[in-house]
Image 1 (cartoon, rainbow, N blue to C red):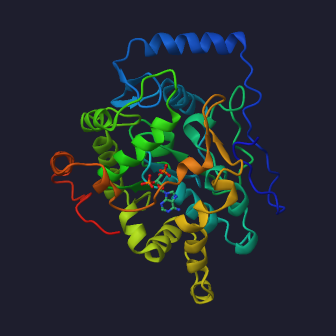
Image 2: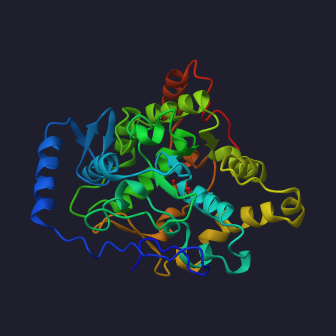
Length: 356
Ligand code: A3P
């Protein structure tokens, strides 16, 4: 069962499944984990939405696995100048962007009627760096990936190594963001499915309070978003900031921006041939969520050896404004006020509009 399997229909590279089956615990590994646990024991902790606890590491709440991954990224990940990182707060459109980025970058390799996405689903097309860094023992090797290599991460801009983020680096970032009210609702649904049955469930009211306090995996929401927003303002050529709502409203416009940013603009001829429309259609919620592999047909995302999530969990409603079915007027006002206050003066507006 591969976590991600790069499609093998071409001669560009030899695909290599990353399967996490060789997670051998050596003494060295055990010693590393003991040191990690000793460090984590010194961090402030709070209630996790999936696991029992999350820990505040360098300003952001992370699971033990996410901290482990971040340390390994810092010590062992070697970015290449052409790497592109998809970054997002959880449940803000990662799955959609994975599909769009992969199919755009690889559009000359595959035809749309027999596209690898149709067989694997978006989760499997490129690695989620935060945990895939340690999916293969002792460290996952990403060297075989073709350029530009694509990776996803939920980590904050300031948490990532300077080899990726410094002005000298030519790595690019695509950040996708969403109305925090919809992110909250989506995350609550997702995390409660992943939460161990041995732990008491987290009610929506409790999740709401935690979210407002900034306490959820990779949170606080507003701080992480602002970090990427400011970085995108400083270096627009390096960080593209997208909003889920804009993409729903004008998918073709946003896709063209994305392609140009990634250095793969659509040619006039491609536009005439309807390539933009093809990609939008291929990656649409309606199309992807109805594929067998994303409906319970065996497609999974293996985050760690223990955390394996079925593809279908990444597709729920795919709408803007579902928060209306969960938040009272008072709750809505509270999040909107926090959002306004936190983003004040930044030029970023989130959650102010409502489209379906
Ligand atoms: P909802 O729970 O509001 O439906 P992520 O991919 O970052 O985990 O985000 C998941 C959210 O994006 C879910 O939102 C999911 O339904 C939605 N989503 C998944 N694929 C999508 C697509 N192709 N187009 C639009 N939304 C999509």
